[in-house]
Amino acid sequence: MCAAQTYAVPQADAPGTIALCDESMRQRHGAGGIYLLSAVIVPSPALPAVRDRMRGLRLPGQRKKLHWRDESAPRRALAAEGLAALNADIVVATWCGMAHDKQERARRKAMEGLLLDLGRRRVAHAVFESRGPERDRADVSALAGLRRSGILPPSLRVSHTPGDDEPALWSADIAAGAYSTAVSGAPDYWLAALLGSKGTVLTCGACGTPHAPLAPPESV
Image (cartoon, rainbow, N blue to C red):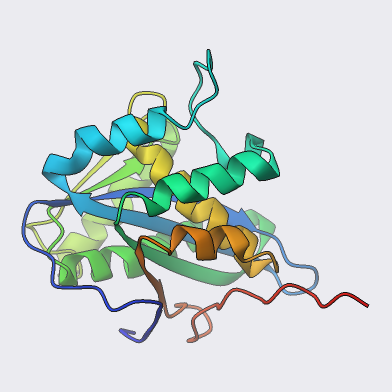
């Protein structure tokens, strides 16, 4: 369960780090979907700089949050460069074979793997983007089970925050989007993000292997 595909060896994390977490889902024809959670880990004192960097990625006059899904290819390239500039640790947890009506189960399983890794790294606080009160309560219920079982250390605080209220969370959206795009065969954004970051893809809890990004198809 601790095996992982690591793109750069992360150094030991000191207490006081924060993990900014977000999700992405990728449907695959005939193979079930992949649910993934990304965590961008930075020192807590660096949060103001992360917020400034993320706000700076918006277009002039843009008020809404940065969202990978809504961005053009050139804007995604800029977002990947902005993520690289954070010099963060990026961790990706996946759960494959996801049926359309089992997304919440896939999230719980991916979250378990992610939080286990964050606990090993001695991360102090994991912040997930809020998905609304009902779904946040489902997360809290799952987290309570992880604490009771001893999987989640009591030292790791977990909370939810709306993405509109916390620009630092946009970094996790970029990480999740870039990796999800890479799994589909377009790895350039993910590789660009890793130019300044340390990336680790955890072993998928469903199939026991890390989902490596696919190489782009060769031109004929």
